[in-house]
Image (cartoon, rainbow, N blue to C red):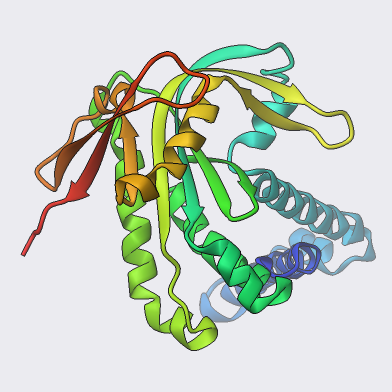
Length: 287
């Protein structure tokens, strides 16, 4: 059912509504059989039997169908907006801007401009769909929140925790995504003749979260953290590293025995007075 919903949300809602209503019908039928056939001394109560077969029960069936449809529609709205976003918007929590300490990770597809020129927009769009779909499978298991997809880049966020071990989920997601792409390399090679590679910048700090828009409402993050993270991501190529982590975030991580790290040096972005110390966190050979 989940894969079916990836292709057409409207059809998936109707399909799931029919499926769950049919499931209820099968359960009622099993109860009927249980009382009248399987149980030796059993018989279906006349009142219940009359209710199940009476035309007067039609409103109940329609109510069950409507309820199932509504629940499935809300589930898909939640999926479209992103897990947790629907409740945040409905509750009005961010009608007034609020400050939070958050971690951001920008994931950027390598060589996307060259690929787009080579393939054209249709094939490139299909490639990005697959790439981002694979990434989306990992965001919830690693407690992340998808902020947005922009072009060939995805932005994922975590609320900064006091528990440093919990903050390390962002690093684990990066390597889980690398492993997933590696495992699907044959699929990408057969379909596109190209296995995606990507880079990431990770940083943390205070941001302002606010609800923006009137006819298309979304939660927006504002602050220097996002600008810095984006610039860090672009520096991965210069430092020849697939991932760069700021000193601010590095100090709030607790790396276990699976990880090693390297201080790759400092950099200064245009328009900034402060230098940013950068780290590369890598997986240790577990063989």
